[in-house]
Image 1 (cartoon, rainbow over the protein chains, first blue to last red):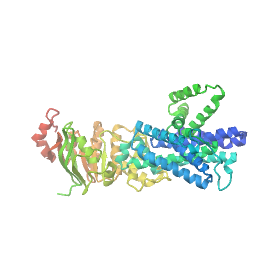
Image 2 (spheres, rainbow over the protein chains, first blue to last red; image 1 turned 180 degrees about the horizontal axis):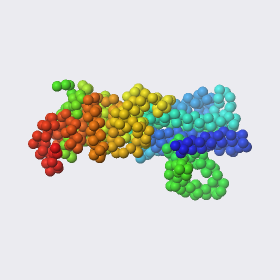
Image 3 (cartoon, chains in turn orange, green; image 1 turned 120 degrees about the vertical axis):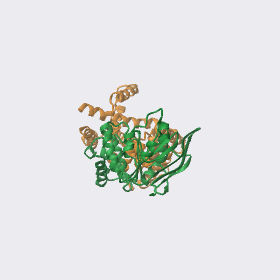
Image 4 (tube, chains in turn green, yellow; image 1 turned 45 degrees about the vertical axis):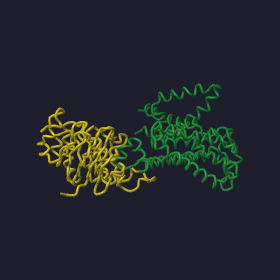
Length: 311
Length: 252
């Protein structure tokens, strides 16, 4: 199956390029900022792809889980708690708990109802964040410090941060791929394709789906921690449904059926988003139609397109 | 008389004023094929749904291997040993033939909350799946994507999936529906072979197959069992002829 290998090869190439970029003259701050954005959003998109493409749960509230992780950083920062030994467990617990509580309700529904209820939970998180006056409210919150790693300011080293984001992206990809191939993932895939069949061999899909939802939300929360550190700023917009929509778009743009599609989709999306404004101030007039055309004419996303070209 | 494996007792289901299942009693003994027949609209599908757990009855009990399973969910009934096939073929079209069966074997083999090892590399599951596929004659098709199988092969795959759950009773809902004459012949041979090891409740429209396979036949009409007995008794029953009158002559 050359098509399967092609998308993985291309993704590995992209990851290698990201790994080498700082050494090949792309080490300037504005490049590293762009790369960090690509890698963090790609990691969040991979976790969403695991949920949508793997478990069949099309969440339109994934950014909220990411925002919960980011807000964990911000709120702790306001109380001068910046060490990773505190930030990381709190962020993980908060994102997991948020996903557990919202997922426990949302997964009882299916199809459009699931999309709408995750959207609703996402907007609830967005408005809750907007109302946190002590942490910036509508305007967002600027961090005093990046997260410290055992009292060291390693996160402020831009090169270290670059490779941390890259490592996290690779970890997300590997973890989600491993989960999908495991017994657990097999039940998820079976229940996605044919829920009645899954039940008729003895699996009640609900607990498996809920666990998948919590895992994906937790990974998104971790991406949120990195995102807060990358921008040294946290705002309610991180949780908005637009951001969730962008993540969904990255997943579909790359190709829903494969985790690597989420990475390729995120790269393409963020690069376009960065490049188009240099052409015209009305760049969204180009960006929107371009995305629509991409979905219309690239069935199966970028991966499907490449596969079709080859075949 | 041996203890019944499956015993349906006084089952009732109403949709509005319509009694779709009206005081149905039914038993399946170990190792027998009990066929359930009846004209269209007799309530066979609703009865099946209540036995498998997708529809809750208004009254009555379903007892399986001595346990009251009336309130069990579908997955729990499968774990108790009651496997089913569907009237409309229900397989996982995107999985390989082998994985379709392996996922059923997985349900019977320890926890599925395992996250590290690739499930496709678990030889014990693949072995169990291959055994079930060999049973139905599909073992050389194991690597194919299930959606690419012929209709008759898909029906056989469904039976292999059911076998992989290590059932005590197979509930086959029109396993021959849509199969061609040659495929039908194969499936009948297969069912006859399975009969010695599994109790089977067979819902089927193909009367020739029913009379060839069944040890006992129950006839459902307008939600009630109007006759139950050996194939000879059912053939001779005037009531059964009456129920079928206007739809089709009772063949054979």
